[in-house]
Length: 503
Image (cartoon, rainbow, N blue to C red):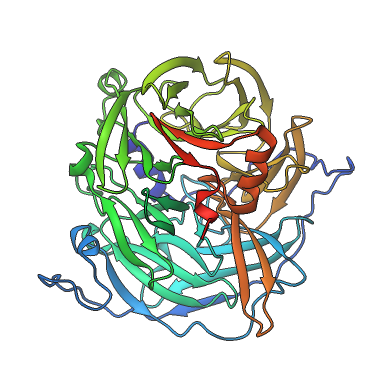
């Protein structure tokens, strides 16, 4: 299935979901638990000022040079203070993900964008929260995809959009107070935002914990055109846009971007434009651009298959693995020699997220059916050293997209989001089997694991430990210690380990 077909699938909401995630939910003790747990829900109606304005020549107020270049505006800001919506003292380690409307003929019971918070130790669903933009038809709200938390856990980010608006005014990034679950800000973007993740930025001098957002930058006549590109927000500076690039900067359609462990370089997938004729599309090559986040310019390109999607890095930063959902391949790149050194089949069809385990000896590929049927149900396993597929595991769940490594190595779990069954699967990486399914009412495109402590004044002190970028903070330190990593490698440069936590 090409990008044009996938876009139309995003917009189609037809039949009710009849596909079930297997007949048995394997818990840690092996007992069956199919019913799930009822959870408290609530919905906010948010009033959004209408209209747009032409950016000023010089940035004023919230605007920056980058926000103007990328056509990103602060639409609304709110007082998000108030009572806590959930008990962080009782749930010090949480997992948050989206709770969306579903797409591609698999609508969920909810129509609005939202989020769900889960206890990452007990698997208990703590709370669900939905958001409705005032005056916007819920059927015109864009499906919310990959969510995330700010590095300090203060904010949750939910990408969505108003499909009734012209595409240049349609994108909406909802920024939510993580403690109160009240709306804090709404940003308007050109085209719809897609995924969000943490970036531990370091350019050799400056260290910052930032939030990276990717927009849908496809070229679909009459529907979508390249928008605000890929950009970073500073959550400690009112979520201002402090960097980023557009399609023209990389001479392609940037899809997903992943920060190298050195904190300076992004691996960006550039699939070819959405040509409707598959006989043509499948003969075109996609590429991966390496973008320097100090200059926001590409410094290197690699040719891969025709639908490059995800990138995973070894803990020392020496190797990058690029998953291509169109060609069903995994490509291995040496970040010291800057050369492609290996290719493997992915063990599944249309792989999306690819994820290394705790000791970097196994690479898991989530089968989505990307660039094909979008009905993936399996999890593939690739040997990243031999660069060869080694196994496939049936999940019985429909349309997985990506996973996040649980930040506790003793748990050794990969949490995989399935957005046509409205649940997350906890996969045991020791036994290579499903350990638990976590049910909620909406479509899941997973986000972040966050560790919290409650301050004496009742506020939260948070730390993102794992998200779509990989491990962070103390969890990253644990993996580096496990593997004996002393430095992060980029070409001939070496960066001291844990430099992002050195203050």
